[in-house]
Amino acid sequence: MSVTSDPRRLGGVARLYGEDGAARLARAHVVVAGAGGVGSWAMEALARSGIGRLTLIDGDVSALSNTNRQLHAMDGNYGRGKVALMRERIGLINPDCRVELIESFITPENAEEILPADADFVMDCIDDLRGKTALVAAARRKGLKVVTSGGAGGKRHPERLVVEDLARVKGDPLLAKLRTNLRKFHGFPAGNASGRSVKFGIPVVASDEPVRQPSAANNQAAGQPEGARIGFGSGVVVTGTAGLMLASLVINAIAGERED
Image (cartoon, rainbow, N blue to C red; front, side, top):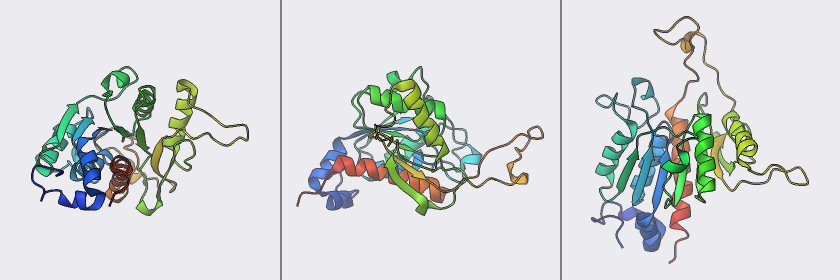
């Protein structure tokens, strides 16, 4: 079975994962929430790996300040919806991939309704704690497999990224808060009798690299009142690597072991 209508386009996928694996990828439906510095690269990797159906979720538009780390951010795209831009790009990469858009932000009020019940995987690439908590909790309630990413701001070393269970990852403040919210408000397990954290069964890509604070001069928001801050710096070498690692977890899980 060809990955696309023209086997030359993604023939390397079948040679790597096997014909059966490529067929599973072509039948798969993956949801990606967040089309930013992590999510946009994950979306690209899924499309180039022959995923047959993608649902892309994000209510934001591409902005000039996204240029350092987000795949869609370039002249001609600023001000347009991020997921709409990614659908256009994916159409040029893999025309056989069916791409559906949900141009909304994930909230506690809409998360369960938004998530498609037939998704094979949900990828959480959101950097907002409220939306992140809502998405992961909704995916678990609906029985959907989910993977998530940690904070990438203020980090420079992609080699510090690791894969770990959400319950046991260390050194990531965003994921620590997510874990607390899931336990406190959504019934996720805490420690066992020996005091060791009970795994959630949710893989994460995260870094234990200490967050690098911007200098005061570099953290002043242009055109804003004195004292307004724009947050951590970020770099594509970390955000892009995190997105590709997250995509690899999903791709390998769907394709399975090669049979030959």
